[in-house]
Amino acid sequence: MTRRKVYVTVNAEHRPDGSCCPKTIRLDNSGEYEIDKIIQVRRCVSQTGGRGIRYTVRIGRSETSLFDEQNGRWFVEAKFG
Image 1 (cartoon, rainbow, N blue to C red):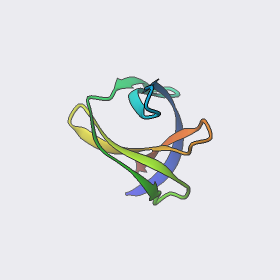
Image 2: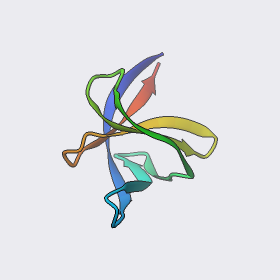
Image 3: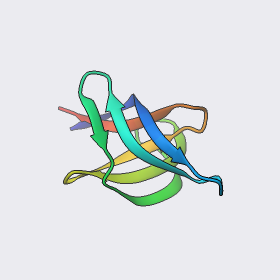
Image 4: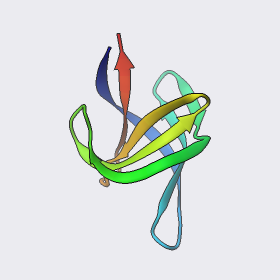
């Protein structure tokens, strides 16, 4: 199974203390997914290239890595194959 960087639309709450809390992820053709839980937040390098703040999130029963490149762009490490 390979992973690829896929840019997504994220709705997030920006708090007065400067923190960010992503609420939903929208893929181009797959609909919108509500983030049930944020498990971990830390600076990290992606396996698919790029870096930023990685949010390990739970959507339903699945965990995924959501990256904030801190330039207004967000991506996930999508699984293919």
